[in-house]
Amino acid sequence: VGLEQVTGLGSAPETDELELSLLGPGWGECVLVHLGGGVWITIDSCVDNSSAEYRSLALSYLNQIGVAADQSVMLVLCTHWHDNHIGGLAQIVDHCQQADFFLSSALQDEQFAAMVRAYQKGALVAGGSGVTEIDRIFDCLRRSRRPAGLAIQDRRIFRLDGEDSGHGLECLVWSLSLSDAQVARFLAGLSFPSAGQTKARCHPMRPNHQTVVVWIEIGETKILLGGDLEETEEQRTGWSVIVRSPTRPSGQASILKIPHHGSQNGHSDCVWRKMLVQEPFALLTPWNRGSKLPTPDDVTRIVGLTPNAYSTATLAARRVKRRSPPVEKTLRELGVNVRPSEPRTGLLRMRKRRPGSWRLECFNGACHLSEVHSQPDRISR
Amino acid sequence: MTISSVAFQKSQDTATRGQRDPQLSAALSEPELSPFYEDQPRDTTAISGAPGPDYNVLEGERERKTVPAGHAQNTRVADERERLRRQDVILLPHEPSFESIDRPSFVAIQEWEGHVIDVADTTFLARLTDLNVGAERAEEEVQLLISDLSDDDRAMLAVGRVFRWAIGYQRSPGGSKRRVSQIVFRRLPQWTRKELDLALAEGRAIVREIQWD
Image (tube, rainbow over all chains, first blue to last red; front, top):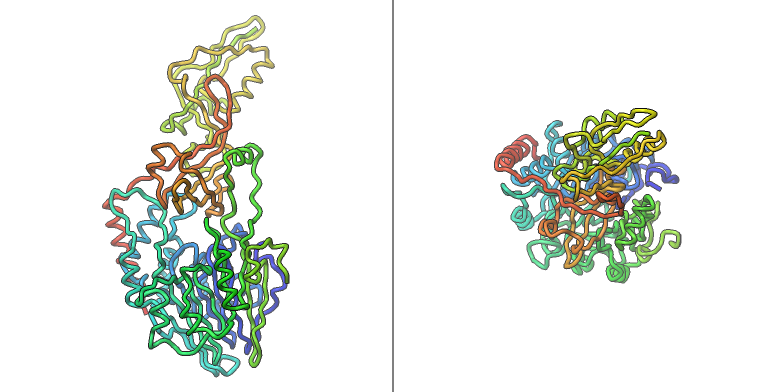
């Protein structure tokens, strides 16, 4: 079932009610936050991989719960450019004309924009160039002449007054990256093609040095959204530069969007020790590209750190598409398994009124992290 | 009695795939078939043209049959043969031309376009776009053996490279038929200096025209 067909999503949160929703995995992942007072922010974007249409799930979800996105979304943020992380983001940028738009400061570089154009124009393959979405976003920004803000380390990028928030609390949104060193590493690793090189699909660079990490403060409630940032064991990049920063906002977050699908290389002990409360809510979208993330070891590690860990979907095998008997027979003889590349798209939704505690809801296969490798029909509710 | 001799042209040469004898197209009243290397799903029957008639028509006592000229190797020709058989036309193998001797045909029944996302020691991982259903996104993936690739294709194996994977039936010139799986890495063109200069100019224009805040 596609997420758009899921019933029971209910209505929009009350004006004084906070919401954090994580959608994915599909073509991307998306975080939606209702700060209060009918003001929403979106981070990254996702297209349902069960849907035949390439449509932003964030816009669909907001529409389903009765929120007019074009009137309510006030901040749109792109943490990094990978096509498989921001599917449909250009639709959000285009639709939410009142919203401030921010993206990684590294993407302001001419060489990066040239790389996008080269790969996009050289796209001769089914399945896209690998830079399609960021190309659409650049095109949208050029046409609309809307300003694009740059997310850099420890920059306050959005503020909602207590008077407008519906609950009386001031809301602040910060970008905690990119540091100068992260930008430099990213630009040094750009893969601009050279003359004579065979055209190919653009492939993401590793490690990911260009993810924007987001910090949200709603009164005493803090939220840390880790994007896809990987730890590098280098003091000036990765998570180390964020944890060590003397200028980052203080406090400890009670909700973590786990970076990089729970992988070991996205993990930092220092983050859990210094930036999070004890046993925070930890949410992730799983990943199923060759090696599955999180691995069973990752699950053990995360669940050992907090019992409140959840995934938007399970990694159980999705139903394989049925093909004609000769094709099925050939695949069997070859010993290969053509499988859906992503799990079903699910939704984790957390809501909270003041005073009160977070209430978590799981939709369309979302589950406790300990069940992420289980079959969907065996998940307890 | 009418006796007709038929030769079926086979094509293995990928360079000639996609060509089709216009007379046969007209005779069969079918839309043009999509060539193997176009981004078209469905029927990828390869037909190659060659000069001269392939059907030798001999007059019988009862009727005279004219048979369309041209070389063919798709299944619709089998239908044509069946029709002729019912009309008392005997089809005899025509002495094959030199070109037709070693040119098996290939009719795809399932096609994907794949791009390589990881290469290991003995296998590579790829994302697949199902061309049979006209998918626009790579929604499936597969792990394939490197040893299954030809030497030429093995040299092209790298992350980001694009290939076609087809499963279908191969018919030999002798008429035998077997199921095959065929992976061919696409020989995409190379970037030219001119294209890259243009991309650099466009990159500069993008950065200049966006109002960075």
